[in-house]
Image (cartoon, rainbow, N blue to C red; front, side, top):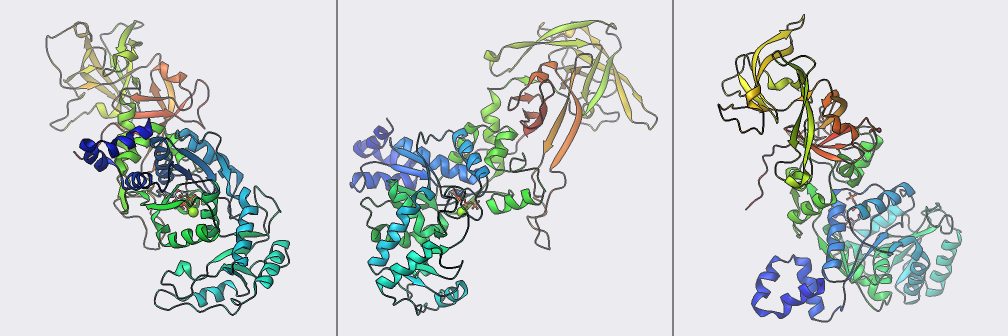
Length: 569
Ligand code: ATP
Ligand code: MG
C-alpha cells in the first residue's frame, strides 16, 4: 500500500508534479534511489544512545524514520547505540523502549544493541589493519589533538603511522587482552592527515577503556568510536537509508569510507536533516540532564520538561506529537518550532475526544438566597457540545455553589460581563442568577457572593424572555470533590532571555503553581492516571500518573484553552 503511493508519483505523469512537491527532500532522494535501482527496498532505524531520556527532538527522528519505513512498505529498527559505557544505564534503555512504543513506532522484533556487534566491529578493525588502513598509535589524546591541526593548518602524521601490519595486529590484540592502560594506545584509521575534512585526518577508531558495560559486562576493555561503529551497525542490519541530524554532514565521507573499506556488500546511505528545536524550551539531553541532577525539576518526567515521558505525564497524546512533527516539517535548514504549535496540536487532538466538565480553580462561595435550603435538583448537561456522541451527565444543583474568584468583582471595569452587584449572568447548564450583594471577612476580602435565581430561565427549556452577556461555570458545594491542581509555565522566562548574566539558565520562578482543594464535579474524582478532560473555561487537564491515588486524583494542566497561535494558511 505504502509502496503504491511512491509508485504512483513516479509512474503517473499527470499527478507526478504535485505529488513530488508535497514530498520532503528525503522522500525525493529515496524515490530516486528506488528508481535508479540503488536500493530495491527501504530499511531505516532509530539509534539512540541510552544516556538519558528521549525528548521531543528524538520524537521527530523516531516519527520520521518509522514513517518512511511505513510509507515505502519497508522495515524500521530500534537500535541502542551503546558503544560508550561511561554514561549508559539500564534505566535509560527501558524508558527509551517505552517511549518509542508509545509514539507508535513499530519495530516489531527488531530491537538491537550495537554492543552485540562488538566482535564483528573488532573483525572489521583487523581487516583494516591487514589492508594497511589502520595502525596502533602511542600518542596521547593531547598529542593527537595537537598533531591533527585545524581548519587552516594541515595535520602532521603520527610517528607510529609506519608500523608494520604484523606489529599492528599484535599490538591491537594486546590492547584487547588488557595489556595497556586507558589512553596508552589507540587504533587509528590511516586516511589522510592533509584532508581539508578534519574527520578524515586519521580518526581514532578504538580506544582502551577499562570499564564495565551494561550489556557486555567486562568482556571488553577496548571500545569502538562512534564514527567507526555507527556505519558498521547500519551495514550489519541492512539499513538502506541512515537518517541523522546535520552535525554529521561532515562525518559522511568517513561513514562512506568505513562502509567501503570494511567491504560490506550492501552499503547504507547517510542522509542528514535539521534537528527540531523549540523556542524557549530546553531540548538538549545534556541540559535536561543537568536540570534533573541539580534538582531544579522533579525527575526526567517532570511535566515542565519536553522529554517524551514528561509530555506523556503532562497529558500529551502520541497523535498530537505526530501532528506537531508533521507540521514542523523536515528540512535541511536549522530553525525553531514554536511551542505554541505543540499546544495547538494537543488542543486540536483533545477538542472532540474529551468530556468537558466543571472545576473551579480559585473558589468563591455563591449563595442563592431564594433557592430553598435543603433542596437539590439534577440537571442534564451535555459532555461535549461539539460532539454529541459523548452523551450527557447529571450534575447536582443547589443553594450553595462555588464559582471562580475572578468571576465576581465588586467594582468591575467597563467591559466586565460576569458577576457584580446588580448584574445577571447564566450559570452554565443551569439558571440565570442576579447578584444582590456579598460578604466580606475581617480583612475586607470578599468571602461569599449573594444572588437570586430566576426559575423560569432553566437551561434547555427554551426561555427567551431576556438575554445575559456572561456565562460562568460552577460546582455544587454539597457534592463537590476536592482535588489538587497544578498549573505550569515555561521553565525559562521568555521575556528575560535564556541565560542570566553569569551564564546560568534563567528559570521562571512561576513555572509551577500548586492549587489545593479545588472543587470539582464528583465525576472527576474517579479519574485515573492519564485520563484527561476539558475543565470548562480553564483548559485541558490530565490526572497525574505519580501522585494520583484511587478516588483522589491530582490534575496537571496540559494546556489552557486560549491561544494566540494561528496555523499559517
Ligand atoms: P541531544 O542532542 O539531545 O544530546 P543526541 O543526539 O545526543 O541528543 P542520541 O541518542 O545520540 O541523542 O540521538 C538519537 C537520534 O536522535 C540521532 O539520530 C539524533 O540525530 C536524533 N536527534 C537528536 N536530537 C534531535 C533533534 N533535536 N531533532 C531531531 N533528531 C534528533
Ligand atoms: Mg549523542
